[in-house]
Length: 213
Image (cartoon, rainbow, N blue to C red; front, side, top):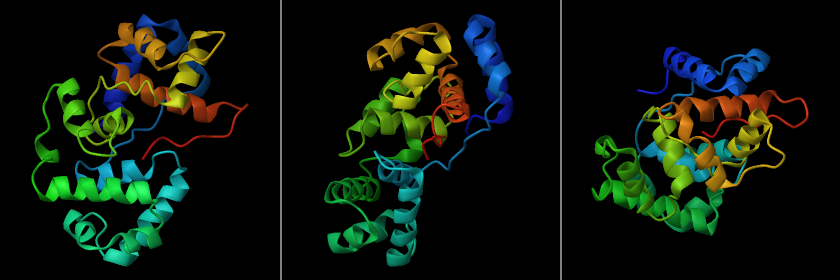
């Protein structure tokens, strides 16, 4: 189950109590909407498609994939088609390899998305063993598809920007600094990340950025 509106509200209230910057941010832009995605292969494949491209571009590739193979959420269907079909749908050569690696891991039982370890670090480790799934992709999947409350995608550029902005830092913190800064926000870092994307999109001085997925 994902982070529902009620769970987000509870976590953000606690974050606002601990860190006045969140209280000020909530007063400025209000609460974010929940972002819940289905657990499983399709959501993880969409996460791969969303790496380093806009949400609109990833959606367009997904639609072309569905037109080409029928059920884009069926790993066996993707594994059965040649790379030319994936390339025609808009996959880069690299992402074709990543998608095929994921499909084969799921169909072969190497990756069991319905039974990832309960420990967040162990779940991330299980996901990043698959070619093409880095820490960011693993964290995005666990946050949105499994609703893990303390996932903190500190490598996300928008999260880094908004942590710096919320805390009034002179420069954008890098990934390591963003992780350190959020230690005091455990176990509510997932809500902090969702709020950071919301705060980013509400800023008048930059174009809106949709949440991943």
